[in-house]
Image (cartoon, rainbow, N blue to C red; front, side, top):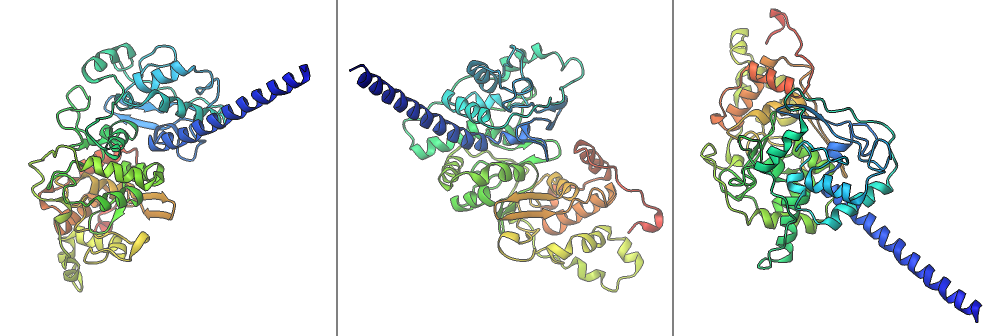
Length: 436
């Protein structure tokens, strides 16, 4: 009789263990998806470094902040953190020892995440290899190195609390809102900031200043935002980073698509698009027509054929464009090729049609490099090749010929500032005889 009971107990224990293992595997699998959707690698995996090993440099108005090691390592990562400590860090901006975390960690968005989702991410991170290396320590100048002062920032800017479903809306809409407002933290980049550098709750998703880049308005305003985009165009852009006649992703948006959005199921991308198309439009008086409606093919390069030195020197932007850009984007700026590896048109493009030309400058300086599941999208960075003045000349030519003339004229000084902010190499020095 005892042996029968023992066998029965063993079977029950085995079933419980099997069920627990299945639950753990499911939690880890969901955590992997959530970490991808939340783009944890963007701040916690250095280029070419081990996954979640930290070491990412994040530029802020107050100085350089380093992304931390969030691997399962017990000394340098989160391997010794309790569930409560991890949840407090992600949702409340409080570190393991109670220290205040800098809001470069977007806990003002992550506070809206479900507790079980935060713990699923932790389970996934703990299942991954430990990275036994310290991340560089953030060392901001006084007074920003006084972490206790972040309590005042939170008092003005941090609305703590989990996002609740709107019972008047569909499941798809609620999922889209959860992805946009919480997990994918779209507002972190795409919402303007107040004087205290918190997200401006009066202008959600109306566009944000990222220093070297401008994160565009993604509300359904017809001129300033995405009001002239179809839902399928939005989904295609989020999945691939490219929609012919609309936009091609670069900079921080290109990275978000590369590391996160391209891997989301189409149903999630559809839900994101559904939600974005439902929010309140946010107009911008500087954007008088849709960004992708500006520009037309240019015949400027035709005038350079057979032109004498005086005429060529009077058109430095056109000369530089002919030598550096036309081979891919075409002499008329119409782009070339079709499908995934097509070179985008420079007119009818949201970057060149923007009232702020800094994205054009930053693309020229930084280039484009998106690693997609279908292959790589590459545009070379011209920062090592062109001086500040030359980058300004090309950018002004592109804006005037193919984009929004109201963007204003970029100066070499502005290019230099953007170059410095991006940590790019100093421009080459040219003698007078080398200048175009």
